[in-house]
Length: 487
Image 1 (cartoon, helix red, strand yellow):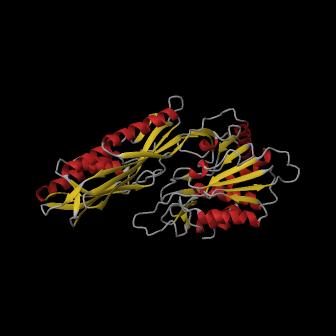
Image 2: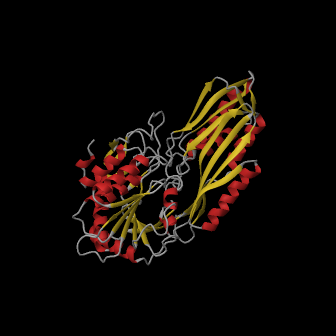
Image 3: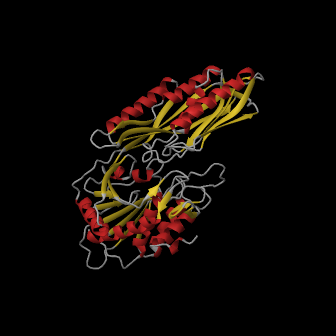
């Protein structure tokens, strides 16, 4: 489809081109190079660093040279999630946008995440770089890499990289809301060595799979009552007292997404096989009832299969399931001063049991902890790592990011609120998000910056059901122009 037929034409044209360039986290080089070359072709000053971040500078429009500097910022990576059975390669294949099949007021992708998070923001920045008719003061455009898997791009920005006063983070996902704060994060990874052994012919084996869940963003969607595939699968395995041996166990592939699917290859003695299956399916029916309103697609599939060569023994299999179930997961604390707002959560985003050699099996986990309290965030990370350490795992924290403390009296917020009210005849919502934003990384480096986050209406980010409301993109663009003009 030709997105440039939609309004605003230039923004949709830019977004459509971004979709043609593969850019999942850790694979942003082609898009980073293209942005850098686009800036240079427009005669703008552009620098691309070793991490792939691109900083572009554009002089003020005539008569606005003395205005405070404005920084627009968006990340250029996207979360790669595809529907079951998809052969899409996010590092190689383009994203194919389409009108949502159930509602053409929304744009989605064909079987994958869309990348509106944060491709719409990047496309808007390109419009400002290209259009010489727009009114603005001195501008800088900061395109960052790897926001979705650790914010390593933002973490590499120095305290002297940028010169502006106002930061407009274009990573918002609610058109009628400005974000002025965010939770901090800790990514905690662990590796646990386990011992496997040969299997014997007295066991029957099956692939047991949890599927059909909505998943979603582990910050924004954590309070929507959605099922966590890995935890639910282990709960189902716990429901039977049969002597189960586990060969493989996998759930989730990115820390920032709630796992939608999880699968175990497991076996029990021949004489227990039917009762084992009945136990698992009975527990699955209980779970389906619990998720009936919030995640109705939950399904358990049970497929008898050939025996593997090796597996964990019964005791190690039981210890493994108990260990996973004991890892703090989901909502852990709510804000006391803000109704219905999550303060602290954890998401077991990656779970992988692999055999590397006879007798050598490794469990890999990655948890993403979020909190508006840095102390609480670190306490939860300590608790998770203590659970895993006592089981014999080695742990590390590859990435941490600080919380962004809200500033309700911000002059930038006041100006943005006035612009919104003048345009749309109502006041916007003001919020702090449980999701992490790169603003948290920037605050220690640039304490003088006045920052807000804004964007169009996006639903189901970090899942193949991601979609962006088409009309809200036009509203976002109109608001952005008025705000920049007013600063």
